[in-house]
Image (cartoon, rainbow, N blue to C red; front, side, top):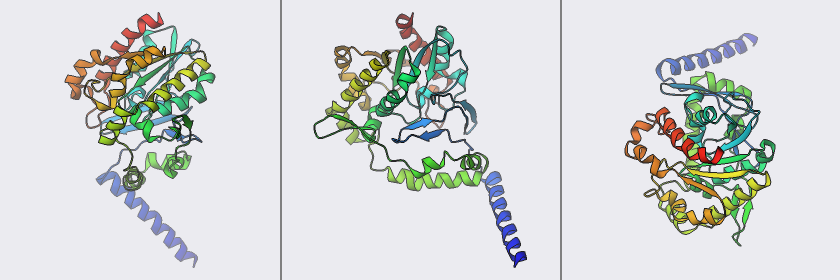
Amino acid sequence: MKNNILTLFVSIIFSIFLVELTFKFFYPQELNTPFFITGENGLVLNIKNEKGYHSYQNRSVKYKFGEFHNREYGFNKKKEKILVLGDSFTFGWLLKDKDTFVYKLNKKFKDYYFINSATGGWGTSDQLSYLIKFCKPIKPKNIIIIINNGDLVRAYNSNLFYLNDENELVSGKNEINKLNKLTENSFYKFLINNFHSIRFIKIIYVNFFVNYNDKDKLTMDSEDANNRLANDYILPKKLYLKIAEEVKKCNSNLILINLAWRNIEIDKNLIFYKENKNFFVNNDISYIDLNNGMKTVHNNKKNYEIKNDGHPNELANEHFYKIISNKLENILN
């Protein structure tokens, strides 16, 4: 009996080893460390006080994260703080620290410490949720929110904040996916970062279960999303007014910057910002539109994208840095 059990155990181990070798040599996967966690209300955050490894094709980068779920660059923290929020474009997806525009801003404005808490997949509701929890502990002098074209569509998809029947802004919770909680397990992190077969299984699960279940959500290019953004400005306005309120509570100054990765004149998901500039003026909210400074990028997008990925590359981040730093010089100096 014991011999049979031992034989079975050895057979299982050998089979797993054989499967892993097959994947490694014939169908290798990109091994990454999960670097997201999910809060109690369903807000997705970067991990904190840890490292994460991210690879894609010929790119491989190491991220370090700080106490506020921010990307940690190693700059002097004993300066006036500027909190920067946004999505993966602001985070610096697949880029080394020194190649991100927030890192470059830290280098230029030596009297300030820019805290990059941007997180992949974030929208306006996520930014507001983060501010409510972390603005007072951080105590930033300024808060810069980098707007991307998917921010409001993601806000409509989110349950973190929504409008009730009286069009009042109400806080809620996002559903927490079981896989998201699993990624916070240390043993799972070890497996997914070292075993090609486990990585493959995860991809299959995400494609067939997670992405499939999300099929009914608004997408950035959907006609439904375009119509809602064009005709219903109540949610965006309520969100930005609430953001301004939270910023005032922690004695900070708010600066909104439209990154203009897509042309505001033709991208329907940016129509709110195109048609509501007076809203920001009337509510004393500083709003900066980078569209004019992004014409070169709009006309040569492939030169500024990570190949086969679509996120801004090193050249794009240098361009972001130059036009954003020019805008901030008069504000910060």
